[in-house]
Image (cartoon, rainbow, N blue to C red; front, side, top):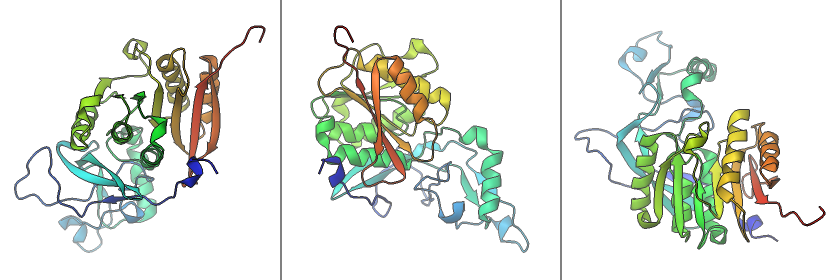
Length: 302
């Protein structure tokens, strides 16, 4: 049995503990964080918060509304414990007020609401996505993947996977994202996990080659970033740049929700930059896929 197959499923976000926040909010009450997408583990049941506004409490009120307007309140981010299973966990700062849906609404009503805000919700980085938790679990329970290696996370968002990699013994971790606020929270989370000395942050817009990292890394990690064809192609190209000539144990590890349809695009682009991709079941997470891309070694006459 492989090391990967020994992992078990079951991940939760523990919000029962008292933890500090980046910004004091005297007299404020803790609000339930809801993610943009329907597959976020922080989303309330049926996509609707139990909280109701005074307007919605009136008889006959049934129109949903959005609080927060999109991106969460970064300055009021709360430190949460992400349970990685079997006694392992990571601390992560998560923004408050992330597109909370208020009012008693039907599941169909929430779908209509999400459709209306589709452009704003797309690719949001300010929530903890299931794919990042799955990848974080894998790294936490298989630390040899990153131990004593240099690691770069593409599209890190809040930085869960990067923090876990650092805690697992990576010699250097660079977390990248296009959103500076998310990088600030990721850096704070690294400090909260006691690994700030090996973690760096870097602004990366994969659509602009001039922002791509110039150095080489042993391992590239990414979770839920293949959400369209352009993104899949760009992530593969950036991975190829970051892995350089490649060496023993060097690879790109990507966790992708099974329902996404852009893994072939990633594999094709990766092949173009000298990486061979294996698309496999994700241990303990049947709704995820695990992509592993490694440098192809060409021999004379091949």
